[in-house]
Image 1 (cartoon, one colour):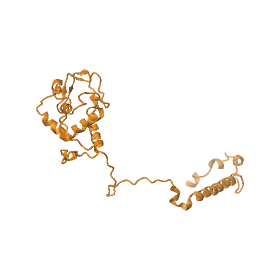
Image 2 (tube, one colour; image 1 turned 45 degrees about the vertical axis):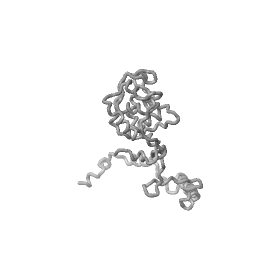
Image 3 (cartoon, rainbow, N blue to C red; image 1 turned 90 degrees about the vertical axis):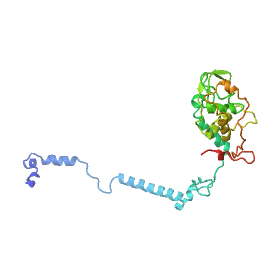
Image 4 (cartoon, one colour; image 1 turned 60 degrees about the vertical axis):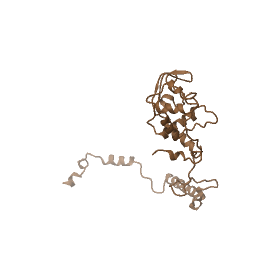
Length: 256
């Protein structure tokens, strides 16, 4: 049955002309005999040139496949990453730089009102730049930080009627850092005042102003002498150690 299905019925019944079949075959392009034509020779020549030129370039620059081709006289290798071993070199940063950097982080809580520039928002929030509450002694500023201030009060000749909240929920360390940052960054300090406030100074301020139960008024703050400083020893700006003999480093005063 399968043999019958493979038969060309049209051909057997005379429906297909053998002449037509032969004509169609003759119309097809015959295959080029092997070895004839120009395409094969061109391809062979191009391939040979690629192999010759490419091989010459490779072996002239490979330097015997030595790794010295990647190193020249001016090559400086990158430093090896530190794995925390004993030979690791620690770059010493001055204590005051770290203290100010930490103070700036705390100051992020104040930017909405006083702005990153310390210029405040005219008519709404007072500036720290040119503020009499920032310049001069540290007692008034310490009192404001611990208990806040309620308006009206004047800053640089302009009256403000806002409430600054107390920040006594912050640690002594953070308050000392941000007050140091404010004084050194925005204050106009005398040449002999380095603007540094220590943890011990803030501890002393908590004791000194512990009787205050709410925000200060301007009149209460003005009762504190303008040039009064919170008690405490000055520090070495490089090491953070107290300059007075027998005193401990500030880091030792940080509460857990």
